[in-house]
Length: 497
Image 1: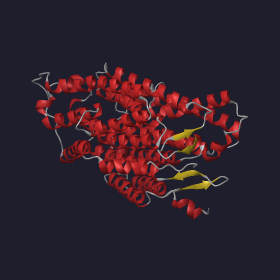
Image 2: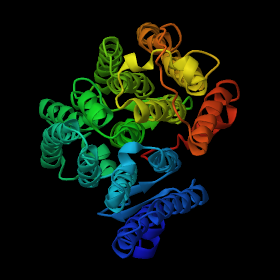
Image 3: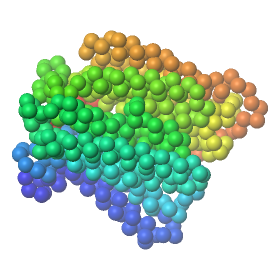
Image 4: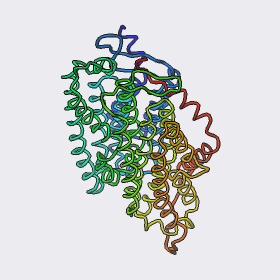
């Protein structure tokens, strides 16, 4: 394959790179007035989105290191997750217009958006990487940008604390993952997932060393998706980072991590897919048992820890951990139906989670913090935000008629089809537990009287964003077929037959 053919598979990544360079260039040229930079960022996202839509079903590998497979894989699965990242990026740019934290650093907007696109570029490569070296480099690009953004505003001490903790935990998980990769290379002589699939079937492979290497690699992936026990950074970083970055990490970064996990399993360990879409996985390592354990621990710890939180950002952080546990349910069934359920859930999770974070940001602009006591009586003084926040929280719980209910329904159906009724029952119990801390917010807004409750100002832009996200949350709760069909058509991962 020549260079031009290889580059045809990475056109979205090229578009993001060009946007990053243009943002830096305009930041240098218009250093006194940077109002144009967010518009450049939005334009870059739109152009990249158009490229993704046009090449959505493009399939192939690029940058071959030997054999028929390369380091980078283009397929509908990767493009679907990239669309989720792009939608999240576009919304985060819009959120910045109403964020007091971002408006206070207008003189550094160029660096802010350059780092965001650095994150997006790392996510894009991570989503499509089919080589362990590219996986590591992509994760480092994503992580280094996010470390800086976590403490970027420097408005409070907790901003710097969040960035430092994120860096320390990230460095440890990165080191563990790199050690695991070195062990795999030492045993097989390759880092390409396609070649690894055939090489690890060698009966001379040391199963104990290989299992240890897989656990180390999973530690790096688990850190990125906030899975227990690699979740320790999440509450502190989510609380300390600017709300826009917290929201971005909770959706986009997590989506890239799940895409990596699914591709790693599908390409590296699946030898056959039957007519029902079930994966036949190599017996070298019991991935299903590990994922069941991690999923149950993640959703249980996330939900029970959220019960005691008085800070809304910390509560949503633990909620995000719990939702990672739910999404692992779709991965652990090891089937195309499970992948479809994860993709659908991520799409609705994007809408309802970003909507909840956005309203928390609007309220924090007025109150100065995110404590739950500041929500007393807000349902009466700011009814629009109160009702829409209620919609997002009910959807995050997974109650009808919201999109969150449909997302969990697809996950539970995939579990029942795989005859995992006990795991499905545990997930249902966890959803019931989550109802308490979500409804607790509504209790403060509507059942706790506060005559001094402030009126939260809502700009026209904020009104429109909240309206679109809340309407989508309700609409996809009753009319979800288009998204379901899209997710089903996108659950096509290029791998060995």
